[in-house]
Length: 448
Image (cartoon, rainbow, N blue to C red; front, side, top):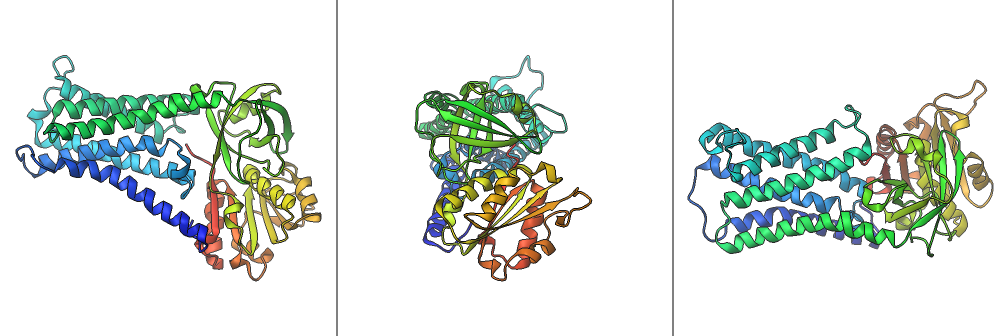
């Protein structure tokens, strides 16, 4: 988000730097191919097909950096935005791959050669292996939910297909050899390939090993309303991970860190109460539907902290408005608890949307916070209210916001967390109220 404080200028500078580095990682290797000796021109379409092929390979290689969860690189944007960027860029790279193959297949059919794998030379065979891997990877990603592919299984196949596709594509490029002479060009691209595979080793081997050195134990599992559960974890070797209110972690339960079964959950606890961490999780997906079967004593691994959805970056806000949907209250609970512990006296408004009154997580605690240490107003909105309900009904709309926000609310900072349709509706309403974009901060649930 763009802000006007010194911290915001620092964030904006970092964002520009990382975008520039990304573009350099894509354009730089391609530009080097044009330096010095070049192969004999093969015509516009031939050169264009090769160019987009190299561009696709560079973009695919950089995808491994985008999903490596480097904290300094993701901090200016938020890891949820980086993951969305990864999806879009992967789709564009895949289109480049298809265009590369289509141009060569249509205009240079003899060069493509026979499609019979028995007599296909290695240079072409590796290219077809890469294409098949990328088709399977993108197809399974785009249609995972309609095909009902279980999330953890899909993640393992996603990584395997990505590595196979990248390895085959690198082998294809070096076997063909176009634009890789003299030797120094091949060395540069070889170094890039080594860096890409090095990222795989870091993410899938070194980082899991580091997590095994700081395990946690589940010490409590509490049932919450609305098919939600709160897990309390304590480190086997203190202290616990350092995080800020509102951030999230990748949590691994009932598996080793090497199993690729980590899942992102927001902290619902606050760092102002050290000694343990908590996550409030709703039974929604393949993994979370079994969250209630976790038992105290089980080992867990926590990769954290991540996320820019947190109040400490906006300490100069005149007031705070939170909008939560369902279990989207988890990071907001973390922030409210921290504000209470710090004795914050700013005006705070919470809009909390749920289906029914008996499904509201932390309802009693929210009432206690409003009656006690915080200048907090809680507005509950129910889509299935009881007959005697006198509060707000339906979704959090523009009209509802107008009814409960103070007159100077455009100077407040807004934190929205919940299902994507709710976030879009609230953001549209805030824009119509005149809230600057820089004061709207959203946390997206779905990273897959």
